[in-house]
Image 1 (cartoon, rainbow, N blue to C red):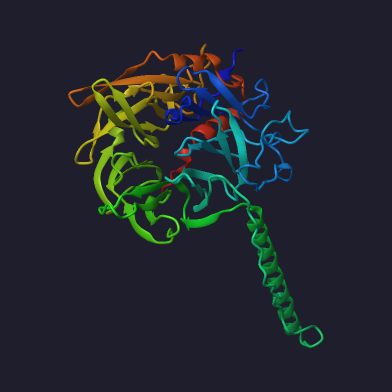
Image 2 (image 1 turned 30 degrees about the vertical axis):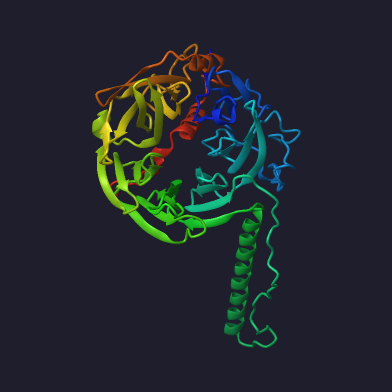
Length: 500
């Protein structure tokens, strides 16, 4: 039986024409990262190299994952001293990496560096992108909890990370020398002044034993907390925290009215408890400017258009897009997505900005992808900062990720062609040949309306013909469910109602 191909979970375009280098398309599929020439679709690099594609199933079982004591130790070296590190230790090559997918991928504003999160090992890995499109791993940094959001700051110096426990960290994008801080002050553990020799009654002896057990428990907790802190042996700073799962964060910079004033920076975070928090930028993140409240379910995505820095578009599990003046914390518009796709209980998977140069002039659009949906919604931002629905893009499979390719005037869409369209659990019985991993679309403008059509793109055709790693079509039901959950996990964020 023919095998499926791993779909691209993440897709990012890197514009490097300003540096005189070829543009690159970066994608993650299963356990691997791929780089392609954006002009031709030629594959430039694959990381890690030592993954046996013939054995890859896309589902890492408990036995196949590396034990915690065998995980790669973190390094702290300057950028000039960093060398390429193997993905796994000697003797474990047959087992492959300790992760089954790479769910988060971001590129620095200058296009020189790539940061990804490998899921099961909770590791943030930074890569240098060479002139030829090769990936050189600079540093793996293992977080205490699994990261759920990743974003670089506009200056490209700092990487922001949010995790499943609601904490947000700031760390250098390129790690340097780091000296672990140690407490100089030594404290003596407190203890009862009484001893069995000075206590004579049975009741007092029982009280003394209870005090000793309580103090021993406190000492164990202190040692455990100290062990967690020592695990982060790289430069980092906890900048803020939510009391719920942190689902998305973005760093924004807003120019001031006065030309002599510096742009003010902010960090926007969204969580499972329907909160959007607007905090000041580093180093004043502890100052909360305001909240944007209005959603009735979790918020999975935040988006600020580059051409409208004071406008925020948010979406999640309540079936609406909310347009905000986030500087003032005011709602501008509420757009029903259930009506747009004629479905119920839709969840926003992603919001993407598209800026393309066409013959008639520049085209700016906002594309919205829904979880487990084979349609891509298209909007334009009007002069009054409201969204106007345009024509819908019909895909051959569920949308996974989107990126614009300005050099070609097209949009590349990663699609899931393993499952039936608009389903997150029903697999196709027979894999297609060749399988469609990427679809390309072009847009034309007519009387203020956008019309999308399929583009005859050699880049997409080349990527689809080469494919990715094999995914067995005869997986066990448990393996299929694990793979489904790795791609479609947002539905699990819904809170159970009282009736449930």
